[in-house]
Length: 561
Image (tube, rainbow, N blue to C red; front, side, top):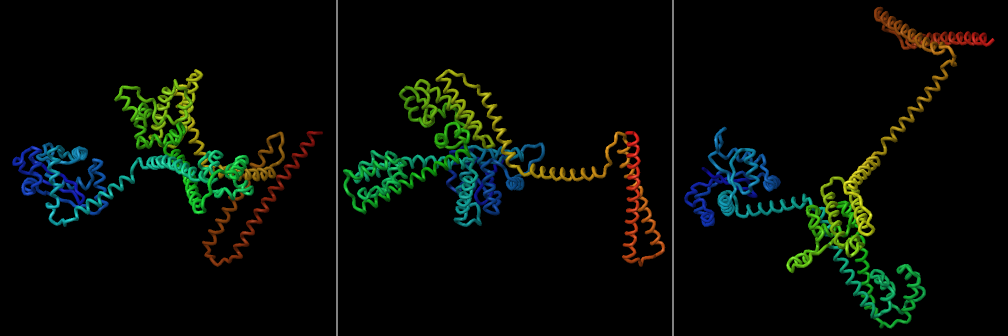
């Protein structure tokens, strides 16, 4: 049975025929020894067909499909053209060797070509890869390396670009930077305190906060120049009149030594650097909060943005954190203590990074382990909701937080908490309500347009109603008043029809006589005549209606008498 080898290079698809396998045998060790020698390997494996890629984009497309185990139309055409055709109902007399088992299974499903992927085929493909430039005659030296490098760069760039976890990377980098900034600001603040204490040692006891201390250091500069005039500026920085007065009094009777202007300039510059770092830390924290509300709103609502970001960064991504069971999430960050306990057969740790949550700090020493286990369970649920839920909502996180609060009350006071099913139902209802509110807020213009249309129609209807009321006769107990307008309308319709028929007859007579020289004045005269006739008809109708009204009034007066 013939063995064909499919080799996907950066320059194109190639098909090799492995013949004379009896000489080297079906042994991988024998293949390994013969692979390095092209004289021996070239006799066994020969090039059957080669199809180059048209462009770098085409190469990237084929590479992406092969990495996912999918066969493209180009590869299918290439195999169908160059491989021996198999008759229907008969077995193929060849085997196609491929490097990827997923790709082989997909080829077999689509084309019924028997595929094989084992150590023997992989060793043969390794030899093909080693001597590929010798098989292709028109290939120049260095072209294959350039193609491989370009395809590798474009493939890696596409993978990074379409990475599912790329949004999590921002949170991971932000929390790492936040932790390093905290350490740096603390160490730099201590350096400012130590440096400026040579000049003004009493200031350390008055101002405890590092950020405020750096600001005061920059403002005071030389303590000998500090006077009552600088009191408003100090109160603005410190936020307390008593502290500002204490600083001025301490500066008058300070034990510190005098510093040269150059030293004071350096101290001021370093204090300014610490202030800038502290302010940047605030902006970075706001950025982290915004990112966490976008990526993992339920986890942030449950345990806080900083602790949630630390859990995501330690797990590697939100997807990895969602895959973790609650028992793993509970001790995430305490791996050293866990393995030390397993090695020494001691007590395993109860909590890791989750210990920084306020819930465990609020629990009693006896219930800290229980609280950590319960909180890890809820964090696991929240991370899975954030990872796999399509819509962005924090309704579930808020309800899970309420559950943890109820569990704290249960441990302290014995109040029974709600069941998880009831809480999740309430969370679903809240999320649906929020969605409806968002939909209503998104489309405010349509109802206003409808209302304006309704108002216009109402106004028109009112006007029409007033006109109708003017036309109507006064209401009478008998039904004659309702019948009169109907009869008048019928009469008007009949008269209109008669007028239209007369006008049609006039046109027909004009066409028959051939009188085409009618002027516009004649036409206008005819129109005036028609209008006059209509007006006269209207006057007669109104006169008749008035006569009827008078008769009715007379009949009414007789009845009253």
